[in-house]
Length: 332
Image (cartoon, rainbow, N blue to C red; front, side):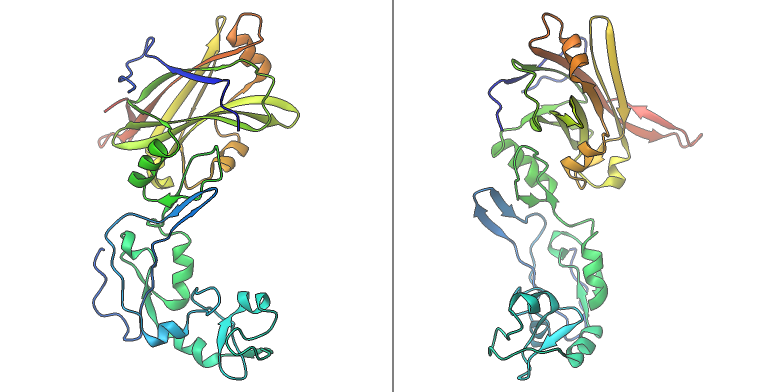
């Protein structure tokens, strides 16, 4: 993606903007229970995969849990668990990958189910695999997988939209990653005033332009501004994402305003959680959308250069204990 013709100038014109510059596991697990948790740290051409955050503790592995580990993908096996004539097991997903040949003895697998191992699995209780990130929950073997897909302690994906970055981690780690690895602008304060400049505004072919991180109310927010094709029409869009879970994001609101030549457009809404991908938020049109002709009108001049000023603020919704009505807390 090209950033050469893009400029973001932050100022405080008319705004009060600050200067830019386990849980220990329960001790009595089932005697066969164990958990294998891995910190992943692998480099590749597209980024770094990194699961971090929280105190690290590794539960001892047992022979029963090792039996429930697929020898091909090393993930825990769930019904149907398959076995060959010699008793070697593997998961149903990997059975198709090995072309119906046992990866251990190379004998034909057939369609034999290991019902005994499936019954053993039913008796197990295991901690969530994110217990080293703070999750205290313990689940029956077959309930554990469902919980882990929605666990509030699961790592967050990197919110940077300019590349397919594979880094994951907790919020403090991702903030540092955005600053150091993606060179994202970090601002303090709950108001902002940005000017986006592009010399050739005709080029809007699905190009993500800008990501800025704001720190206010003890939380972090990602402001996205980009250009893309909406159907046949080129548009610009600005929206905010909250670096945390959806339930916490609902405690905040934000407004965006863009204008010029005596006209303006405004948007007010609730920031989306970074659990929702950048593309999901963009494609749901949950933000301030500006058609290109309108953006050039706001830019003034001969309309050959984009000079778009976007202002906004973030506030926290607080409930009045006497009336039950939410009142805005404009800044901390």
